[in-house]
Image (tube, rainbow, N blue to C red; front, top):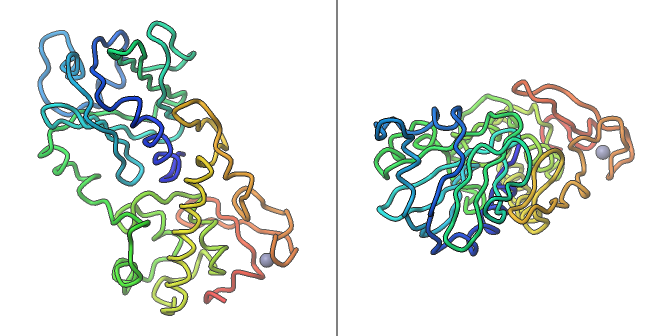
Length: 282
Ligand SMILES: [Zn+2]
């Protein structure tokens, strides 16, 4: 699933190509996508998305794992890519292949496509008030890259949940998923099952520093392409080449050479080094 670095990479790639462009036609809109739109009554026989025709795109932004197209009249088209969602640009009339569920033709001869093999991805049009009232958006925790050690401590204060489960919880911190949680915990030498309230101040500081460096390095690498993820230009990211634990079960730890193991935390396969990641944070 695309996490913060992948969505940020897509947003950065789309921003210069979409800002100032106008939607001129919507030649394709899949029914399952239309069903996920904000509950505003569209004209008969149309989806609310058809009101996008003639509208200018003012900007592209990201919040957590959500990608926003900021539109004229202050509306926001929000994409959640989920498992296999992809956004990119193709020449009008030349969609990139199967599983395309939305095409927005633009006034410069290109077409923004939303491609999603598994169909879990969503797209919805919001007014600012509707977006603010959307529980998923409203409950999002702070962005990790701007987080101070004091704010991070407040977000996890008094929590007995395992630290990895908290990192995955979008209400605690927005944008982190399985890959970057595992990599950050390895880098800070903290066992993923450590109860959050057992982390010392030093551990929290190290963990936040690890989260921020891992995310920044991943953004610089164009994200991690382990399944379907591609940048807006259709390129693969390269951060997967530097994974230290994610997907490396049984392979030697890059630090101590002992085999990495997996466990389940919050229902997610979690790869870690039982030697380097001691229960209380090492
Ligand atoms: Zn190790």
